[in-house]
Length: 433
Ligand code: S3P
Image (cartoon, rainbow, N blue to C red; front, top):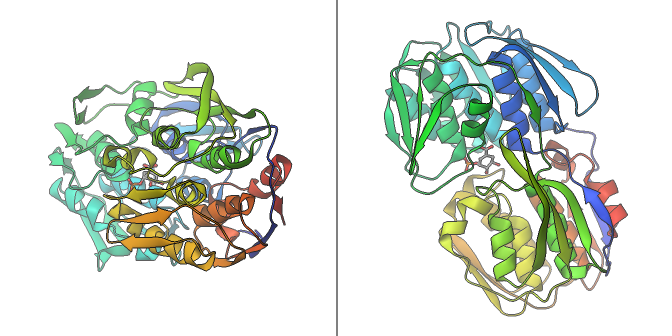
């Protein structure tokens, strides 16, 4: 874990203004390292997220023989070793807090000629891994979990393609199967019950791999090689989300977020906020390396409670903590259903958010697969983030409506996804220390 502060203190603030660029996309940064590592040639990455989660992926690749030159915190060269060039790690691979690193490496390592063990921190050690292990075993992988959870021991094995229907919409599971599919004989097909982020498919194409999409099915043929490329990582919309909500609550004029990734499988937060009445405009839409990005211009808006369409849940899955703050500040009631997946994130985000909202006097009802939140006054108080980065940052945004000071505990993990959150939040107008 990082040297980040153990707690945040926030005085109520009423105005945010200016223009910021959020750090690079976490999902894309992980994938750029992994695919660069198994490509042939030198992959140049700019806009990389220098967060602890991505450093876990970087450390694991180095432990398997990949040379990564770090020119600056955000500019890297990955000297790919080819799909068959990784070597056995001498020690357990530490995935830290990162579910993405662990699940994608399970897929990438299942078909190697060596074994490896993946472990993580206390939070990751509580998270379900059989959702990845089971389909990989169906491909021939030899994988052991501890009661379905990390550590995960992988014995490299020859793989055969499968045709797999995901029981829950999960980009991590889909990606793990597609990565294993590169090492399998035959054509691997994954069917998703609802669209999930498609960065793996897009980036594989950028590395010259043929990945087909037919409706809900993504498919890849085994044995393909990857050719090194250049990757410009756009800003992370999941990090932008905190400032989107902050600006809806308190922007003085136009608040601008530059260069945010707006891949349609990630923009559920924009749709939900707009349904709530947010004034968010997309400007300078462009595309680089197969990923769309844009500037987002946000003005203060009167938000109203809504019933969140279930189809938007996978497209906004990481943004619910801060969307709950938007709901608490809105007029009327917001209801979320069909979001049981939030219970198996870095924390049980439904329960931990409900607890924090309760401590600030926000009326709500916790549901098995969601929550109902009544907009209204927000009090001051102390909230325990449970070590969940996104919950810590979400409650920082609540200071724009809170009647008194806030203290947010256990915030060091903000460094997993957003190392410069405090200076950026302060520059925008939050009274955070
Ligand atoms: C991610 C997929 C999502 C998301 C996570 C990152 C990815 O997880 O919550 O933060 O990079 O593929 P699930 O696949 O578990 O939904």
